[in-house]
Image 1 (tube, one colour):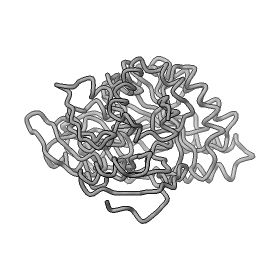
Image 2 (cartoon, helix red, strand yellow):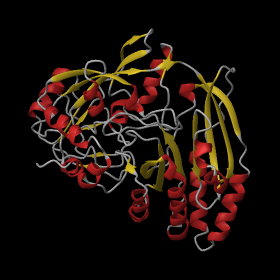
Image 3 (cartoon, helix red, strand yellow):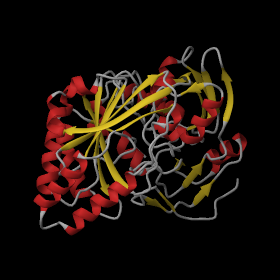
Image 4 (tube, one colour):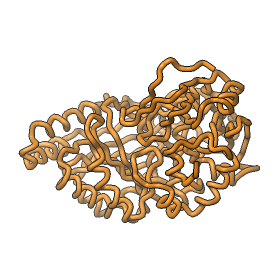
Length: 430
């Protein structure tokens, strides 16, 4: 069964740790099925650890699907590809590009295992562009009794809708078929403008182009705008990435100017307003994602699009009046509605607001103060980002919650995949 020698697991930021009885990396389907039947429970699935919630945490068994990787097959006419769910997104983009296919959109981190990104409804930005589960055409999943079950959108549309965002609670997704588009180039632009102007025109700004997002730098008064549009123009060179350096500079300013917040704000605003704009063309897989080595913790809520500007104004005011120690930017994106039952974007165009705090520092005071704002505006939390909701609150936010839980019980009748955290999250009696 190839048990892993270490007895401790932690997520990327180090905020979530676990001491399971078993860490294992099954070599193949037979080993995976046997482990699901016999390993000490609860069984949780580990990708690359880029979730900030305790989705993976277990005192029983943590399974790595690192051996379920790679491109299995593809259809050049339908522009579909079948990939192992353990494949990291960055590696998958290169495999798809080599066969002339492309993801329609991506988030800004590509280190996640694709199965984990699907299970948490990870997304990029664009009002016509859905989260990763909207690409699902078929999935292969090993259920709570070790049986391999296959579903496809044509024959089992409700199953795909129910398990598209699965949280690893329905079984072990090992292989998926996704619907792609032909490879393309993107024209990426970056510039800064006053955040007040952006918020005054929020819906028109965020829906004007194929992909729009922005970062608000605390105390700067400015939004760093990013847009990406498909183009036939020839490729140019992407400028060097300086995001980690910029975050370190913001931390340094915070540290040295704690007692002079007005000077800190003036210096940051001056620097942001004078950032040189970016304007380049590159292949899709070289544009969306950015290397991020400065670790943080994150809370992200998805709100009705029309509530985004109001909520963000309150979040900015909260940060700048009560939490001056926060220096990480706020990320703002938009996402298309979908039909995935447990997707935060179910049946509504959404504005996503992500707040961050440096990993060595306690994020909870800021996050706990911000969460009531998100909730007041009808927000649904990102499944992989920090939040405090349980089944009582979540079931009221998802119209198909009851049906999704019925499918989950059918897939895992013995609750092999339900940890104490999942039990609270989904309302399962253990």
